[in-house]
Image (cartoon, rainbow, N blue to C red; front, side):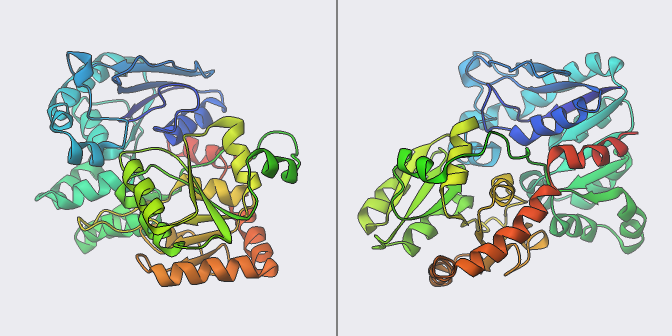
Length: 394
C-alpha cells in the first residue's frame, strides 16, 4: 500500500537529527514492502534527501523569500517560536500549503499517518484523507493541545478524525484521555496506543573499545549526552552537578541555541564538559560505545512542557550504556528505577551528583542496569515494532 505521511519535521540530509524518528517510522513501513510518501516543510537551506528505498519525500514551500522559512527545524518549533518572530509568520502559510499539497497527493494514498497530530491530523481530517488514519502525538503537540481553550472539543474531533492515536509514553496517553468525559475516555481507550519511537539495531562491526577511547581522547570515566542544546534538556543541571569534578568527563553531542551559554557556564564553574557538536552514523556509534554511562538531565519547563521519550535515551540502552536520568515527562512510564536506569528527581542537582558517584563506584550496578536496558532496547528497534505500526494502518 501507499502510505501518506504528514509531518512537520523530516531529515534534511543523511545523518540529520531533525525528525530522524519520523524517517525511522517511514523506513519501518517501507521495510515491509509498502511505499511511503512524506509531505514535510521546506527548510531554509536546500535539502539533500537520502532517497531511501520506498520513501518519497516532498518538501512543501510555505514562505517566500525562502530565507524566512524559520518555523521548523533548527531548535524545534516551540523554541523557534520563542526566539524568532519570523517563526510565527510561517504557521498559517504552512497549514495552507500543506492542505493544498495533501489535497492533491491524498488521491494516491491507501492510508495516512499524521506525525505530530497537531497540526497534521487536523489538516488531514479537513482534507478527508484516506483511512485508516493514525495520528502520532509527541510531547510538544500534546502540550500545545493542553494550552488551547477548546482542548476537549479538539481532542474529541481528533478522535473522530483518526482511527487510532499513538502516544510515545503512557503518561501522555493518560493526560489526553483525562481531558475527555469519563464515557468518552472509556470509548476512546482501545484506540489510544502507546509506543515509543523505535531505534535502529546496533550496527557496525565489533569495535575495540580501548582503541576508540584513545581516538576520542577519553581518559577518565566518561558520561555521554546526545541532545538538542535547548532549555528542556536541562543541561545546565549537569554542569552544576559536575562543577569542579576533574575525576570524570562529560561528552555532550548536539547543537542548539543554548550552546554558547552552556559553554560559558561550564568554563565559569570548572565543569569537565566537552561539546563535540552534531555526530551521526559511525561517529555517533563510536561515542555510544566508548563512553561509560549515559546522562539525561531533561526537565519540565515553567510552561508545563516536558519530554515524551527521548530516542537518544533508547539508543544508549540498546548500545549497553547504563543510564542516569531525571524522572520527567514520559520517561518514568518506560524505565524503572534501579532496573534500566538510576532515576533522580528533576532539577535536583545534589541527587544527580550522588547518582553519578554511585554508578561510577559500582561495576556490579552498571552491569545490572546495562543488562536490563539492553533487553528493553532490543524490544524497541524499528524491525521489532514495524508489524505493530503496520497493523494500525490496516
